[in-house]
Image (tube, rainbow, N blue to C red; front, side, top):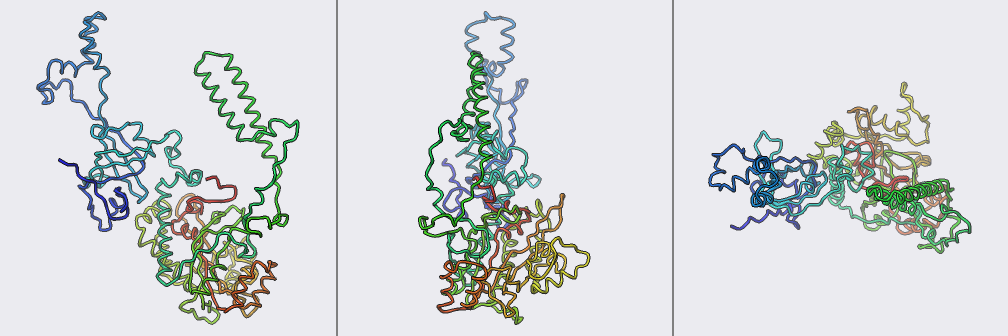
Length: 634
């Protein structure tokens, strides 16, 4: 009889014969359509159990399994007892023939086992139980059991009884692959690690249920972003990561240069010590090598004299490594000022930066082909330690031609950037609730049990729109609320100000517009009063208290937007006011020289949106490989 071919599904792995666990455990119609099918599954072992099979009783002479046995067969089945009797009665001079028959039967064969493995492949929060009979699919216990082991198995899916914890399991027929794990070094083999500890293993942490769930939510939000803008006719445009333009005008930037690698190496001075010429990496490698020699000599125990010499050598090397490390720490940090470099010799021939924002470049396309959007990384060299900021963060940026805010006329036009930003934000909240039900159940259970309710509320509620001046008046009237920062017109609203407006006063998202011109970038449209600019921010409530210790994150502003200045003269003046180099912005001024168009847009801080959706409290836990000050080691 030919073996049954494994089931291959059309989706989501149509180019593989492996079936995802999501397909098996989370079918859209709630039916287990693959029960009884032969399938191939793969994943990583989360936990395991081994059950030894029992041998038939030695006293069960009449059992069916004993019938028809020869005397030698019965002797083999009872060899441990018979061997003892032979030794007592016959002593060491027992018959060579008996010994020849007994020796091959010792030691007694290992009892067969059944392994129960809980595996997860990252496609869903649930695990699948894989049952492996060692007599059918021979495997090594040390290989297959440790947490973190990768398994690829073929077998039949079986439905379990209603009183079982699992509703379905795979009865393995073949083990196609075993990826072993060094259990003593595997970070996830210990007790559950907190999220801040998992950050030290960004390449391993996706195997945790928490991080894999956050990653799926993040991916769903990305897909929702493209779905929304493609639905409404926006074109996706990639803006440059390397730019010569200081987009915001006052941001901390990463400089891009090849000049620092071209410095000539100076000759080492004569008479320096080993600590001055040996690198710390070389010294540490020598310590490791000599430690291994010492351990080897200790284990052999044959040459005490060599051991003493090796220990002394190791001590000297350790001392050298210590001196080198102290020297490295005491080295003064030499800052290379950009104005001291000759950028004519640089790769681009002039100062270049990692982009802080792509809105200026995106605007050039909006002024030519209409509504556009971009989605990519943006960079700020800000050393501030914050739960809402890292050096590299992803941003969704939107620009719309023939668009203005219109808030001063109390008219919210159909294509207004402010209304588009609100609709987009609500679309993301609803999309994640509709398309990630299992992951949202998981984060609601393990992180924040109010998250689903709050997302539903932000999807259906109306948002209040107030000017910066109105916000200041509301905050000034708060009698028993002592803000750390003294409130006065013309200064940026702090996180506590925004939190009070969204959480305490309005109790829902609020949009604040017409900010003072000094706190917004140079390119924002100057209002008729000459003091404010047509900029807005969408502020969302903070995460509710729900656990001990009472931790929450003030998400604050998720979206910032503006109408951009269309007047050549006003924009030129604003560049001068910000003390920026006019040469950097000649290409941007060209948009005002050649066919000016009113336009507006906004930016959504995508990582904060993921933070808001999952209920987590630190943005580093929702970014696959976070880059922050002093942390870029993977």
